[in-house]
Amino acid sequence: MKKIALVTLCLLLGLLVSTSFGTEITVFGPNQYTRTTGAPDVFTDMCAATPGEGGLSVKNGELAGDNRTT
Image (cartoon, rainbow, N blue to C red; front, side):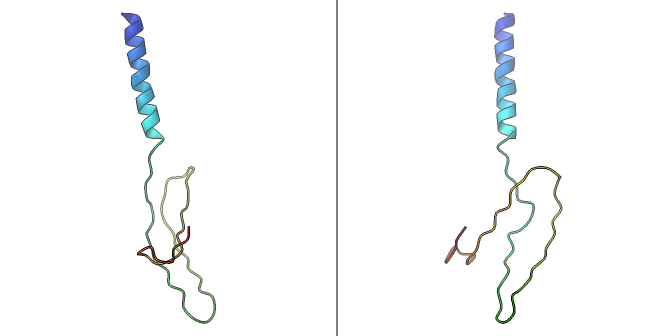
């Protein structure tokens, strides 16, 4: 009986831990910055986020997906 309870507890904890690592959220954007003619454009933006590990994804090209490189 104790063995079954222990195995069940381990399986439930394993499910909870594995689902917590697969979270992806967007904290900023999507924003579109358009290049103008003349001198290079400089864009500055800020966002609020919780400190920790994260990733940044920048996509170059049209919003519809045309001429896009990642």
